[in-house]
Every structure is written in structure tokens, then in C-alpha cells.
Image 1 (cartoon, helix red, strand yellow):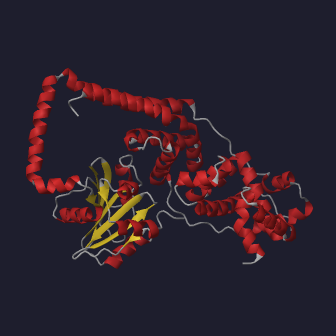
Image 2 (cartoon, rainbow over the protein chains, first blue to last red; image 1 turned 90 degrees about the vertical axis):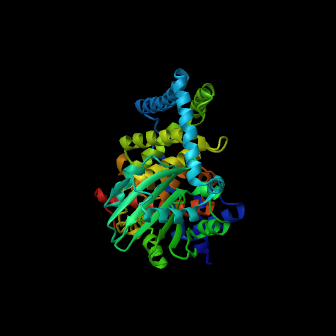
Image 3 (tube, rainbow over the protein chains, first blue to last red; image 1 turned 180 degrees about the vertical axis):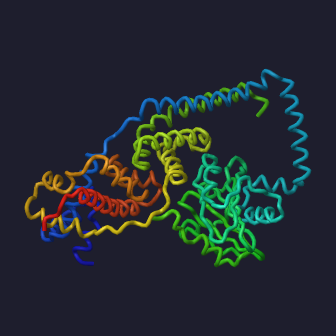
Length: 276
Length: 196
């Protein structure tokens, strides 16, 4: 590496005065001898100073701050009000308890105790993706919102989940459906792309939640692959293709389909919807 | 949940107080960030409100005692990505050498940094400067805002954005270059001619 290359490498830190003594001496010496590097350094410093001076610090407008506080008040008091109902009407509480007991018994009956116990442990996201895919094919899960353009589902998902929802357009798609759900309090997003030959199901969750793994989890090797490369395409499922990826480092996505795996990967690999 | 209503009421009250004490104080800094992301006060106010309401709804998920501002920042950034970011446009070709050539010329005439700054950027209006910043892709813009405007150290910015320090350094490097070329382009468009 020549002196100019080395100087360019440490240029940003020189502008921010972060260089140690040795590097600083090297830098100062070089820019005295090299007008090109000197100019680069000066240009960056001037830009930094200029933007700092021009972009002011604003206080939140008073009406905006007030409105936000009011909205939060509203949420807090409406939560309290719904609890108050049961203290005022104890019979209603008894009725709810009764219905709850019957409801739980019914659910237990349907789920079978062994399976119910399994679902109390952390659910594996990949297994769950395949289960959901099968359920969708069987018609057991229906989308709540359908559109021809995936972007139009944005409003449906807005504000409902604590991660950015990946809404990637897919070529040849006839329509896209979206549905929300929760598992153990975690919000989840689901997309179904109806293709000429079948469907693609995309399951999305908060990556931090999955990484932590106490309610929804993934095997360690998959978490590593996602963390290091942003992808996991090595899953070998007998009947379906499964690929996983990270969107914006905040969301973990799983796509399941009967189409060939490399094709599925390719459809979602061009992450040109969040790059410039 | 139906059996302990006085306790529930108390815990809702507690949540409200906690939120008021820990999250609300960051409103101004988040408003500024929203302004830089969206480029106008109306969208910024909407984004700010959406962020705080979402934060309140998911307050139980926030690990108390950790960096609240970083958590709010992340919510805001996600909301912005979901709602406000316009479709990706192909970057217009910017001649990166123009400003360097120009700087060569004026540098021969002056070494005073105030004079140089004036000649490079003095013609720009405030809203052009704001627009140049908003033109930057979000990941570069964020780092320039945090480090150059909000005085974050690289370490604080890395913690905020949740990435390695090397990423902060390279985004800042590229962000400043993109910004200065954008500023130069705006100045150029206003008929500020380059003396050959």
C-alpha cells in the first residue's frame, strides 16, 4: 500500500481527530507533501463544518408534542377502562370465566395434550414455516387482505408489527395475500404469493426475537449462517424448497414453495428493494 | 388476567409513568432525526407520532435499563423504511471529479478556510442544504446526522445503529463525499460558474 492509499484509509478519522500519535504524524507529513490528499482532507473537513453549522437543532413543535401525549393518554385510559368493566359487573366476569374454561378445554381437545405441551417450548421457525405452508395449501389459513400489488398490503401491516415487513414484488404473480398473527405475544407477518404453478409462502418475524430464541427459535447453525451471510439456503426438506434471509437486519424471512430452490432463492435474492 | 383488576390498573399506571420518564425525554432528538429522514415538518411530525405510539404499544418488549434512545431510534427507522421511503431511484450520474477540479483552482488562490467554505458552499440556500442531506441514501444519511450534526462518537453511533465501528467509518467516509458532491451540484445548478 502506498502512502496515498494509506492516507485515504485514515482520512475520515483524521477529519474527526481520532488518530493516534503515530498515524497523526504520518498523516500530517503526507498531506504537506501531497496536494491531492491535502485537498481531499480539507474538502471533507469543510463539508463537515458546513453541514454542522447549517442544519439547526429544532424543538418538537408544541402542538405535535401535546398531541402525542394525548394519544398515549388515550391508549392508557382505554386499557384501564376495559379492565374496570369486570369490577363493575362481576356476573360478566363469571360468564367470561365460564366461557374461558370451556374454550380452553375445547382447544386442548383439538390440540391433543402431547402437542400442546410441545408448543409451550420455543417453536422452531423453519418447521413452523413448512406447517403453515401446508395449512395454506389445505385452505386452513386464509389471507386477510389480498391485492394484485404487494405494495398495497403496506397499510394492512403498518403499525401492527415491530419489524419492517419485506414486501418484495415477484414477477408473474397473480395476487398476493397478507395476514397477521401472534405467537406467545410476538407479532408475525405472513404473505402468500399466488403463482401460476402454485404458491410461495413467506413467513416474517422480528430477527432479534428469533435470535434470542425463547419463544420462536432456529438451530444454531442457521442463526450463524443468517448472521454472517444474511442467507440460509441449505435446508433439505423432502418435498418443498425453503430459503431464509434477513431483511434490513431487523426481519427474518422464510420462503416455502414447491418451485425449484435456486429459482426461489433468485426471486428474493435481488434485494434491490432496500438498496440504492 | 381477569382475576386481579386492581393490580392491572396499577401496572398500567406504572407503564405510563415509566414511559413518560424514560421515552418521552428523547422526543426532541427523535424529531430532528425524523426531520432529516423525511425532509419536511409535516411528515416528520407524523413519523414522530407513529414512533412514540408504537413504542408505547410495544413498551413491554423494551428491556428496561438498556439504551432507550437506541430502541426508539430503531422503531423510527423501521417505520420510515416501511412507510416513507420512496421507491428506489437509480442514482443520477454525479461527476465526482468536478468538485475536486474546482477546489484545486480556488485552493491556489486562498488558504483561508472561511473563504474556501464561502466559495464552495456560500451560494446555497438553507433548504437546498437540507435537500442535499435528504437526498442521501438512508444508511449514509443516518451516520452523517449522528456523527457530524449530533456529535456522536463512532462508538455511540455503532451502538445506535447496531453495526461494527468499521461500518460507521466507511459509511461516514462515503456519506461525506456523497454529500459534498450533492452540495456542489446544487450550488452549480444555481448558475454558480466554475472558472477555468
